[in-house]
Length: 58
Image (cartoon, rainbow, N blue to C red; front, side, top):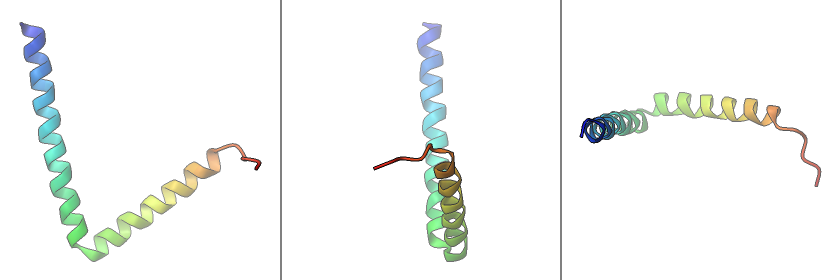
């Protein structure tokens, strides 16, 4: 029984965390400067990750 309670608490915590994430994402979408900065950081991260990939020959 304790195991099921722990799993339920974990799922509840995850739902709360997801709710906060979605609320914050909506705030970011409504703020053009914040959205632009976030998208810029995402682009930088994608470029960094692409540099780590071995060269793909076609």
